[in-house]
Length: 261
Ligand code: 4F9
Image (cartoon, rainbow, N blue to C red; front, side, top):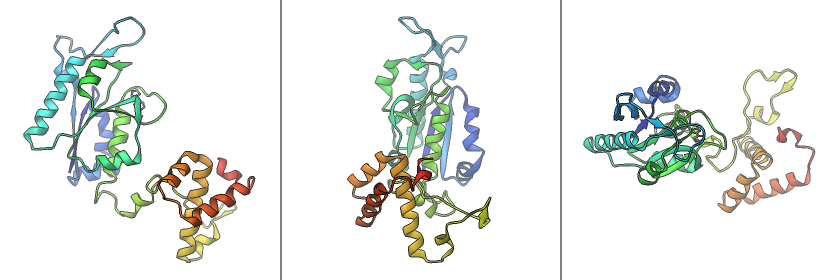
């Protein structure tokens, strides 16, 4: 079982994953644990300050190293007291390396993961240097704090834990699980605003359906994320049949307008 310890000045934000949806149900069923730690509780002054102005001047505030260090020490002590193998301390930051499906999969094997969800413009770099193992980004954009990115990391990890999803096949067909984007999906009605469901899906021919879905994945990935095609090729995830399909796709521009959506 995995336990997430999160340092945040807004613990109630985490109700979003502890009280709603798949992650909440898994929490209730004891498949993972969550503890939030407020750095204000580790502040040293009467105002319970967790930030201060940057040396060198400039806009914004910087999170103080000391309350964060104290919070990290308390987390490590608590994890140790209950016998958890210490996992990494991860800071969610736009300066981090991109979070990937592979890294999420690796996290599922850990007993404890500590997340620093920072606010303000930055964290004192000495704290990062000395006490953070890894900085991870969830995309090339900035949000108002690390809480949402931290919740995304937790949610992505929890849904891969055994027993969390109703059908284990769901996680396997997700985008990125096989290095490609997921295929398109359809449900009732059979005709929507004049657009019919692709005929092959009504055929009951399982091998043809599987091939069609594979080609949908390949076409969407080639058009939207050519970087993923290159990687899948490098990782040996493309069959000769896939390669023939991609070659034909490259020969027929215009027919795939839809794929540039
Ligand atoms: C963290 C943005 C991870 C993207 C943290 C403001 C962040 C972020 N990925 N933005 N605080």
